[in-house]
Amino acid sequence: MFILLMDELERSHQRGEIASDTDVFHSALYFIADLYPLLTGLSERPSMRDLILENYVAATLSGGILGTTFTGMPTISLTTMGHKSGRPHTVILTAPIIDGDAIVIVASRGGDPTDPAWLHNLRANPTVQVSLKQGPNRPMTARVLSSAERDKLWPDVIAAHTGYADYQEMTTRIIPLVTLTPIADEIDARPI
Image 1: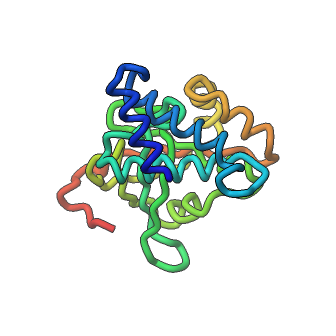
Image 2: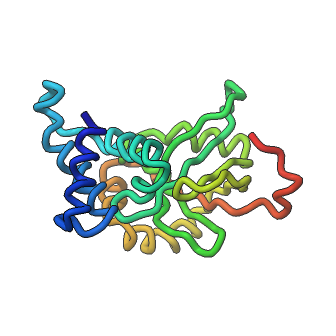
């Protein structure tokens, strides 16, 4: 169903009815969100997690032509080593701030009261793999910002996507911010 919808939206784009590939993709997401209850028999629109999954599917199926941004922010693929299992785990996240090679990510988990599993993983092993906008994987080091650093950067995160302020209001935990920076000598970095 999703592929048929994307094909129809692509034809609309080619006819000039939709301005850009990003508009095509976002139109598809919102259209799917509106039709989701009808298509699935469920009474609610999809969660943000469901929409991010659709974004990942579109990026994968289109070879990175679509789905490299979500709600105006670039997407990244973050691979961490499981702190209990020792196995690699990959999640798709948004990056509200990119400054040169440094990337800032938000451990919001949609305002849930618990931290996301990937945060526990990178606290245990800060060596991660990151693919920005479906690009090649790069070894990076993750660092959870201190409270002072987080407080200083939080207004910039909110400026990039106001939804993060809503997530913070939904939970009693302070939502952590994480910086991802390239490993100094990527040649010597051990891939995950």
